[in-house]
View 1 (cartoon, helix red, strand yellow):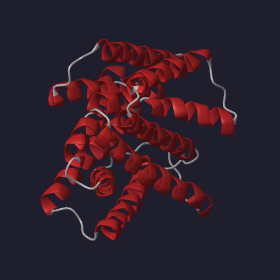
View 2 (spheres, rainbow, N blue to C red; view 1 turned 90 degrees about the horizontal axis):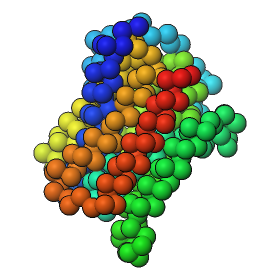
View 3 (cartoon, rainbow, N blue to C red; view 1 turned 60 degrees about the vertical axis):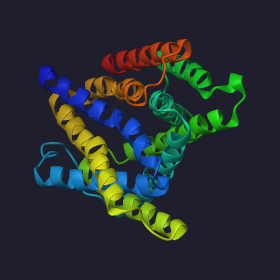
Length: 290
């Protein structure tokens, strides 16, 4: 196990994924959110297809897909590849980049709670602590105290996206014996084409080629290349350590959002950063002590 080699790979994967939120916010201003979600996943398909050709997942134990995996694959594509990212793009359009980035950490919370309720998996005290901290963070960032519907709607859409990815993560866990790049190829191609077709049906046309290429480029880097680095880190130091360092993604996205959109840092934002960092530490310690 090469931890020294795996840490920068996991950090790189997390940061690449984290920057997708503020950069997607720049794109979604002048682009249909459904089309943007589709392009992000098509971009991921392109990157992981290249990764497969280069043998990135070679050496990982994996089985061939079978007919009994079809229901899990369909759920993964529709919920994790279509519904969740579309909700996120609509949420990003209304929420600040800082808020959207930090609230993505709710994905880990929803994953744990869904695993507890539907799959009877054990949830430890550290995970419950992270759930509490992220719940407080969500309340702080929704702006409920100001009573603004527009301020609340964006975070609620992001929460709904986190629930969708929580379902996706639990379903994907049932497919963990298969090559992860194959799974992402299926999700990326299926979800990408479906979302673009849906956008065309609603809008009557697709975005201009320049915007499509920009979105495809973002998806290939922030979703596809991020996953390739994640898998290389898995091979170097295992799932627990990789997941712990990958969790820096939302924090990186939040800080980059402040820089890009020049958002004034308030005490609420500072407190939210501290709470999210604390929740990441709790989950990381949980993973590393398993």
